[in-house]
Length: 207
Image (cartoon, helix red, strand yellow):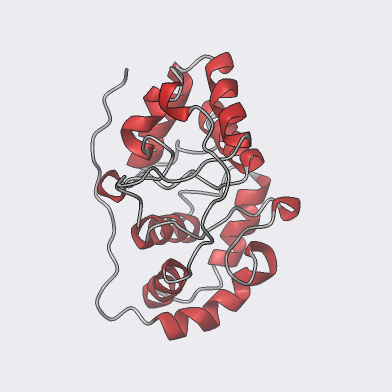
């Protein structure tokens, strides 16, 4: 199993203003939903339940071009153009703070057999036993996410249009893990997520 090291994780400042973030989020809602619940038809992932640090890092990566610059990443390019509408770091922090404050609905489905899936053990070290995420290593929550979005991101890490940009240390780590897994293992993990997942009681989530 590959060793994963913690990387520097940007943090929200005390000055982050969720009310201002709500206004900026109006740019996002048409794709990601009014409550950041995501829209699979538009290839827009669910943002509910993601930590402020992870959201902030992704917004910064889109704005800087570390993510969404590769021509093969069509949806990433669209997101990059939207993130560019945020005028400064304060706006990115505000919108991340607002999204973090949105309450995600409690998952009703069973999480399948993630805990016993051999393939998922590589992922569980960072993303949690039930895909609940781990903010201490910057690993986002996977539980409840659209499986097509997860598959597309895994493909991006494997093919190099995500995680290859200079300065994207977490992306490089993720790409190395994905490339070390054979395709059948990745398909097994995805099949389990299709069955639905929910947080394990007492697990440390990405919040």
